[in-house]
Structures are given as C-alpha cells and as structure tokens.
Image (cartoon, rainbow over all chains, first blue to last red; front, side, top):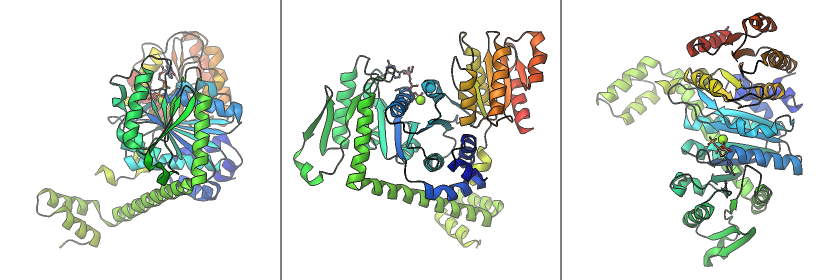
Length: 334
Length: 140
Ligand SMILES: Nc1nc2c(ncn2[C@@H]2O[C@H](COP(=O)(O)OP(=O)(O)OP(=O)(O)O)[C@@H](O)[C@H]2O)c(=O)[nH]1
Ligand SMILES: [Mg+2]
C-alpha cells in the first residue's frame, strides 16, 4: 500500500510521515500531493493569528474541544512557531496548551517551525493543510504568531481568519498592525477575565473602522449589534468582522465564537466568496510553484561560478543588475 | 548564495519530543535541554509537565519525531520508560530513539539500556554531549 492509500484509509502513522515529506518538500511528498489533490477541497480552514501570548493555543484547544463535543467533527491543528534565525532550530511549545485533546483519535495536532523563507512557510502550511483535507479532517485550525508578513501570507490560506488580541499586553493594541486587522474575519478579545477588556475592545473597534469603513457589527452584552453607514446598501454582501470576548482558560465565549465561525462559512458560501477565495489561493499556489520551477531550471542551467562571476561584475558596478539578468537568462556572457 | 540551495536539502531537521512524565515538580532541566537542542539546529516539540506515557507516544506519532527525550525526577523511570518504549513500538515507531534525563540510580542504568534506551544523562551531563549523541544516534 502506498503512503497515499494508507492516508485515505485513516492510517495515522502514514499521515504523520507524509506531513514530514510535505514539510521537507521531498519528491515523495510532491508525488503524494499530486495523488491526494482530487480528494481535497472539503475542509474548512480556520487561521488563528495574533501577538505572542494572547492565548491562541488555548483558544485552539477550546475550539477543538467544542467541535468534538457538539458536532463530532474531525479536527486537525497546525501550530506554527518561529525558527531561531541563528541556529535554524526551534522550540515548538503550542502543544502544552492542548493537552485536553490528547487521547482523542478525532484530533491530530502537528507543530511546525517557520524555517527559512517567507513563501516557504505559506507553501508548506498549504501542503500540510491539503494532506489533512484529503485525509478527511473537517476543520483545520492553523495557529501562527501574527508578527510578520509570512504569517499574514499563511492567514490568507484560510477561509476564516481569527485575529486574537488580549488586554494588558503593554500599549494596548500596538501589538496589532493594521495589515493584520485587514485580514481578520473575526476579532477575538481573549483573556476577557482580565482588567482592560473594554479598552482593548474600544481600540480594536476604532482601528477596525479604518480598516473596514463600510459596516460595523459587534457583540454588545451578548447581542450582535449592527451599526450601518449610508454606503452599506451598495455593498450589502460585505462581511464585517465581529469583535468577540473569550476566556480560553475556561471556555467562556467559545460557543459564540464557533457560531460566528459557522456564520462566516455560510456567508462565504452564499455570497460566492468561498470560490473567490479558493481561486485566489490556488492562483497564488500555482504562481509559487511556477516560480520555483523556473528558479530550479535556472539553477540547473547556470553554473555556480558563472553566477558568481556576474554577481561580482554587478558588485563592481561594471554591470547593472538589469543587464545581468538579461545575460543570465540568455545563458551567455558578452 | 544560500538562496540557490534547495529547500529540502537545507531544511531536513532532527525532530525531538521533550516530555516530562510523572507527577513531580518543575521542568527547568527539560527546558534547558530543549533550548540546547534548538541551538544545535534541532526542532524541539515541548509538551510540558505531567505527561502520561500514552500522551507522549501519541505526540511522538503525530509529530513524526526522530527522538523522544524523557525528563524524570521522581524515580518513576523504571515504570514510565518501558511503557513509552512499548507504546512507540506498538505504534510502528520502534525507530524512534529514546533518551532519559534525570536522576537514575546506577543499578538501573543497565536495565534501561537493555530495554533499548539510547542514552541516559544525570543532572551534571553536558548539553554538548547530549547534542552530539543525539545527532549520532539519528544519523546512524
Ligand atoms: N487570564 C487568562 N489567561 C489566559 C487566557 N487564555 C490563555 N491564557 C494564558 O495566557 C498564556 C499564553 O497562552 P497561550 O495559549 O500559550 O498563548 P499563545 O498566543 O498561543 O502564545 P504563543 O504561541 O507563545 O504566541 C498562558 O499562560 C495561558 O494560560 C484567558 O482567557 N485568560
Ligand atoms: Mg501558541
């Protein structure tokens, strides 16, 4: 039996091995992704991002517990932590907060280090998600630290992106960048048991008004309140991110959060945005693969010493980078 | 010209699960080792305190690790270690190398080795030794 067949049959060891192959971008991993591709496209991918320590892992733990208890859905978790820029190693600690999920064969948790490159992280995360999707997991929760461009790229893989904030993390919302707010489908103020929730919520709301100026929906005393602006009629299909409070320590607010995630999925499917997102995601993926393939061919065709020689001429200002490209692509020196 | 290296070649990493089974105390030692392994370029999955052998084996499987490091203080190593080895084997992961750190009385060292433990380190062990021996055990 091939690795692919074993995975479709539910073999967890085969699944774990394939995830490594895909993460390492090995030929075996690529071959399996090709075979599994027709089996993908069913899972709902949910990104969870936010500043360090806001409670993302605890929230993922609670959400997974909720889905297991109420819907019996199969849940995969991809937890990404940064690699050390010095050694290339990593300490991946997200599982510490997910011990409630152990012993449940309907849950599969995989930790992943961000490793080197920007595009690389998004690509390997996409690969892992595709494997889980093909293996029949209904929901794929992807935790990333919302710090840089790489994580934003990863969040764009998801159908639904949660941005997690918490009170008392220094200068209120400084931790959250406007660029991250723009990718949010749902804003979560976790650690709502702590003082300062109102401030965090207020700050988020005012930032959100800049990021999504058309329509506002937020939870007020447990009720969804919609505040409209005059332009909204022309854009009634637009989703406006709700701001929700949670306490991931004990699960407060989790059913409401799950409710909003479901509502977002329905919105995506009914508005046609689901297909729009899928298309955009696959387009990025295809482009990345083409770029990699072209780079690969380029590497094969140009000997290292020739590359170095031309680079040296650029460094010496004897040749501009633009001319260098033309020479390299034509495969000859003049 | 790092960019030109292929991702797969550059990034194959040794993956290590560091776990603290048993009910006792702190995990300072385990954390020091975790950081040392990271600084040696390994990817360390840290699972925290009070792990049962079942939890450890399950995590080792999901994470497809090459190595499991058990940090034991309680003297429960003679019960916990064979159970972890047994479960790894039952899961089809007999290739995973198991290392034990903590206070292990001399008379138990031989037993643990016989069971298949790849290395045992007391509180005074140097992290360089641990790193070197893990690398050796994994790459063969
Ligand atoms: N008071 C309170 N503490 C919480 C809550 N949720 C999480 N925490 C605590 O916050 C700390 C960080 O939680 P994590 O879930 O590890 O946060 P994270 O965002 O995943 O952290 P990184 O992955 O390191 O970025 C832990 O000590 C949690 O116990 C909450 O709702 N209230
Ligand atoms: Mg985390």
